[in-house]
Length: 408
Image (cartoon, rainbow, N blue to C red):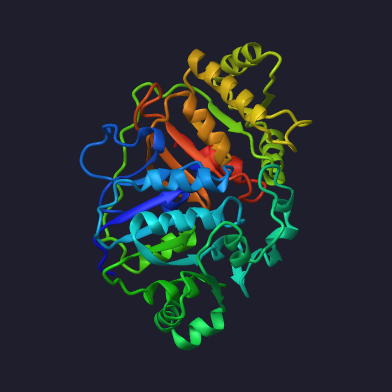
C-alpha cells in the first residue's frame, strides 16, 4: 500500500500483545513497550516494530487523548504513513477521543474503524458490535466494573468523545460498490471517521484492499482482525519471525495472575483447578506477605499457582484489587523465579509488569485466538516466557491449554 512509515498503538497491554502477534511473521522483531519505556535503549539487536501500549482504556477522554499523542510523538512530521490503532472490540474506553488525538498526531484526514474479529465471533452488523450474534450491551460487558457498555452502535460510542463527523457503512454497500469508492464518497462528504461493517475475514480484506495511500496519513482502528487483514494485504514483506533467546535459569512452576472480572476467567480457573494442574490462591490485602510466601513455596516445589482476586470482590475489580494482586505478585517474584508467567486481563498484566520495571516484551506467536506468547526482553526476569490473555476470551479449557504450552 506504499506507506512510508508504520506505527502501532494499543489502549491496554493484552491488546498490544494481541495486535503485535497478529502482524507476525514480520521482517523484524515485534516488541511491546509502555510509554514509560519510550526513548530508552532496547536490549534487542537491530531495528524492531514497536507496539506502544498507552494503557488508557480506563482514563478520562482528556487523559486518554494525551497518552495517544505522547505515544505518537516520534512520527515523522509531514510524511504520510499508516497508524494501526488497537481499540477494544467490546467498545470500552474513550474511543472517539483516542481516535481524534491519533488523527491529529499523524496528520490523518480519515480513520477507518473495523472492530470485527470474525474468527472469535465478534462481528459488526448494521453498525452494531455483536459477540456471537448478541449485541455487546447484552453480554457480560454490560456489567464491566470500570467500563459498562450501554450502546452497541459503534458510531454512537465514538461520537460521545469526539468532534469529528462519524458515519457507518453497511457491508452490503462495501461489497456492491467497493471499499475504495465508499471511502472516497464518505471523505468527499466530510466524514472523517468511517465505521465499516464486517461479518467475515473476506469483508475485512475487502475494506483493506480498497485503501489508497495519498500524501496524508490514514488511521486504521480495530483489533486483530484488522491487523491480520492488513498483513494479508501486504503490509510488510514476508519473513520468518525472530525468536528471542531463553534464559539459562528457567525456574519452576507457572505463575498465573488473574484479575479479570469477566465470568470466562473464573470458569477457566475452575476448569484447570479441577484437572489438578493449578493450585488457586486468593490474594489477601490483609496478609500479602504471607500469601506471597505460600505461593513462592508452591512454585519452588514445581506446582503451578493461580494468584486470583478474592471471589467476594472480583465483581468489583477495583484499583485496590489490582494493587493487591500486583503487590503480592512482586513479593512472589522477589522470592522465587517461576518457569513462566501467565497474565489474564490487560489491567492485571500492566500492573504486574509495572512492578518489575515495565520490561519490553518480544512477541513470538499466538498460541490461541486473543492469547499471545512472548519473552521478557529486559529487567529482573529477562528471558522468561510469558503469555498474556484477555479475560473475556476462550472456551473453558483455554487456560489449561495455554499453561501446558507456555514452557514447551
